[in-house]
Image (cartoon, rainbow, N blue to C red; front, top):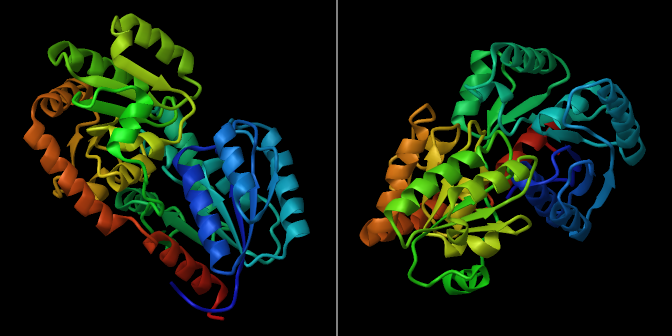
Amino acid sequence: MTTGAPLRICLVIEAGGGGAGRHVLDLAGAFQARGHHVHLIYSAVRAEARHLAEIAALPITAEPLEMHRSLGLHDFASARALGVAVRRAGPFDIVHGHSSKAGALVRLADVGGAKRVYTPHAFRGLDGGASLPARLLFNGAEIALGATRTDALIAVSSEELAFARKLHIADGRCHLIRNGVIDIPDVTRAQARAALGLPDDAPVIGFVGRLSYQKAPERFIEAMRRAMAQVPTLRAVLLGDGECAEAVERDLAATGMADRFIWKRSAKAQDYLPAFDAVMMTSRYEGLSYVLLESLAAHVPIVTTDVAGAQDVIGDTGCGVIVPNDETVVDRLVETATLIGTDADARAAMAAAAARRSNEVNGMRMIDETEQLYRHLVGAR
């Protein structure tokens, strides 16, 4: 924890939940507790009800502002409205935009004399499956916005930092501050399993995240369908909702195993994570997913595609398995899920490693490093 005069901080986010939402809420609560003035500007357009309730419960000032995920002329109106809101609530020392849309609007808006900080939470260009025109569009926008009105860019994983440096995004102004979970689950394994209606002795693998193209829930469903066909006791749990929910419903119905899948569309992950023997993260691309960190905090091992942040968190620590993010991905996920479902000793060893790794990566480090960057930007005071 650093010391010094209180800062006036404005956090801006368009995303209505997920890891970016968790990150912003953690920053807001921790900075307010340290005596800083925190103002949150958020969009309710696609916000989850739980996310809005958590904002309302924070002891900070917060206001909604219409922001849309899609690109369009509405973005110019949002940028103007953001500038008005910032100047009305300010002046601020720092205006910090989170994820690509809020990050772009913060750079386009008139925020007075505040320093502009941007955290991408996964560059869109990290998606190897994106089309060339899409990558050119998103990467070009990041390069253009990073060249002006960006006082600092925060990468949340070493891969994200390397990507920014490769494309010369915000050259010389990129900083690595890895994500970290502050709150540790206070729910026991038995309590979480009882809440989900799971047998005490069944091996369970879960998916946690927004049901979206990025998170690729269809990979989880197919991998678990095939693994459960080989391991009769294995069970699968999905925690999340999103734009792919209808497709998930169809995919689950097509498995013929509806009785072995549990799906909670509106759930606080921390309440159920301790029930799992592993979390399977099937994403196409990431920055550094909070699912990895929340899993470790619950002492739950991780099976993940090889996305940004996976090596940072797992590496050779034994707390999880990283599979190639290519055409073999489902086959490799099936192999790992089958191992977890049949080898109790492997499950126990990975769980112990997850507990050790959580002590190394979670806690207040992220808050401390972000505050230090803010103070560097505004000058020691």
